[in-house]
Length: 234
Image 1 (cartoon, helix red, strand yellow):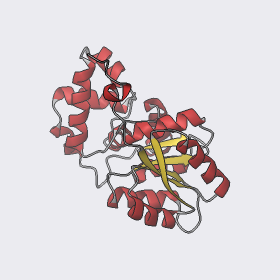
Image 2 (tube, one colour; image 1 turned 30 degrees about the vertical axis):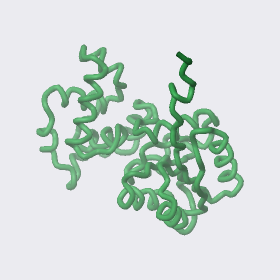
Image 3 (cartoon, helix red, strand yellow; image 1 turned 135 degrees about the vertical axis):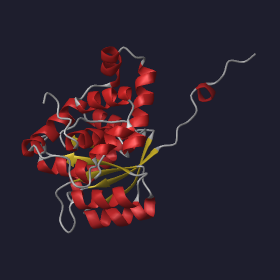
């Protein structure tokens, strides 16, 4: 009996469709070249501002948008907000200059699934696009928590008018434990060790939490946790 071919063992994956948005042509082209060099990524378009990005998303339906934040005509935060509302299947990765950056936090509030520094190495950029396309988080949970702590926690504001504290009642006691761990910045492996549960069980709890709380990913679960007053160490 003949040995199975590699293609039979590892079926070809559909390339992740990516739109690159940056008002600097050289940076935009450089990012596109890096991504196009990967067999599992296809750059389907480029745009120079948020308004052009919206038109490109409507026409190309990319899986992931790499979005610069500081742009003329329409900045990346506003474009991200509109994409998150109109095209929920398209994920946005915000490109920022500094990790503790009001634009990075603004992009997360607007609906971005992750943020990356423009100094990110090419291999990490490729990995981030593939990770976000799969529905997972990119930014280290603790970095996300630190960013939110820096911009949101100082206000010590209670839950916002649009954030109903009774949301927590939707969670089972164990799901609430997992949710608090997510807000603390713990990974699934760390939650598994702390709660003495299999990682597969943790993953099931995480998915249930996202569904019940209406959040699209881990980043937005952390933001919601802060808005509900579940601030680590307080």
